[in-house]
Length: 250
Ligand SMILES: Nc1ncnc2c1ncn2[C@@H]1O[C@H](COP(=O)(O)OP(=O)(O)O)[C@@H](O)[C@H]1O
Ligand SMILES: [Mg+2]
Image (cartoon, rainbow, N blue to C red; front, side, top):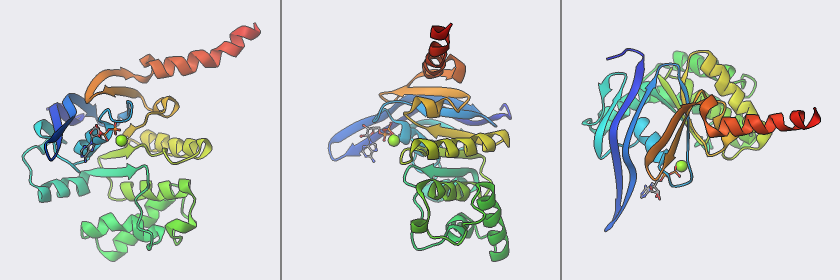
């Protein structure tokens, strides 16, 4: 296997069954992401983005198809093995932060390390480092309700990073944030990317997606395009409309 390939999905299908109803949420997904890539997944609501992220993040399992992360085939794993892979390799950031309200930032960030049995002193040190890395060194003892939306999302990013994941997955991370706060989060992601972090982000906002280097578009559970950002319609549209006033002024 090519060492640079981090995740490989082959013909992934996921069907939700509720009683006699079936929703075919992923219909034959083929996707490869290499180390240090920064990928955005776009698509309308219901196109299967979150389902795909949950499969990639080992929160859910495909019904058929093969999924490998770091050369480890997860398709036949039981829940406990999948959870171990998740703890070791995946950092997940959600739209609604998912912080524990009674714990301060430091304890929220320490949580994944408690699950992987890291001792107290190392846990505290790593959590402080992660919070400093996301710019929250001064807010470690605040509880979520004492933090702004952007700060809460930074805590969530610190928690996702604290165990040194191979891949950072973010499902609509700016979905609850205003434009300015969203820009701050995207700057943070850019820094992490520059530092070598592999990132996959889900968004339906073109200007957010254009921070990535590659855009994968989905519709009805399938990938409809997969292009370097500069060849994607979102990037082309944003940059051509930005040029217009200049042209008009000439
Ligand atoms: N837990 C679930 N149970 C049943 N259907 C689901 C579940 N999660 C998602 N779906 C359905 O699967 C499809 C894809 O959903 P999702 O992956 O959440 O899309 P997106 O994130 O692009 O909005 C939708 O039709 C949705 O209603
Ligand atoms: Mg979603």
